[in-house]
Length: 187
Ligand SMILES: [Zn+2]
Image 1 (cartoon, protein in one colour):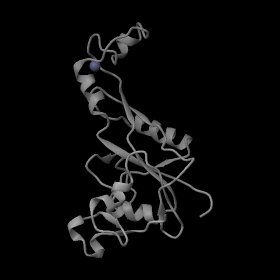
Image 2: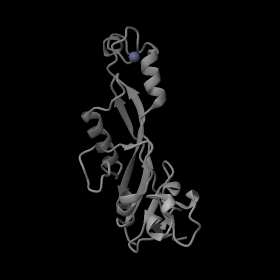
Image 3: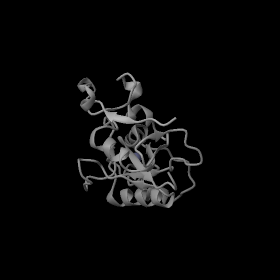
């Protein structure tokens, strides 16, 4: 079924802030674009601005990023992730601040798919998906940590564990998500 989303704010539901809601449906969170775009759930935006979500044959790319021992993503990691996505046919959308900006591709964890980002999605036909890259840590300096290059370079096969700090970073994962677009053929 084709769904149309409209900005809640402009349709008398200011309590919903920047959310976009399904036209003709009650203005509740379950009917928002953000709710539809759960992690790894691919949707398709058609040329007429409607949305379908029973997409078959197109999957979210599996992305992973390497964080440093402070839990930060390096520029190189960032570029690698974008390149990986590209190889799977997807373009990573840069963090949205009204315009495409150089703030990086990771959207803050608390951000929902609404406002200008939702407008951008609704006016750009093709496939769209939100995903959370998996995380590995590199460059730790703790003795005996598997993420310490000086350790694993000596014996890559040893089954060392992450130190407490790295384990914490791995558990939290990337504090945010990325959104990707992919061209679609036809309508
Ligand atoms: Zn460590």
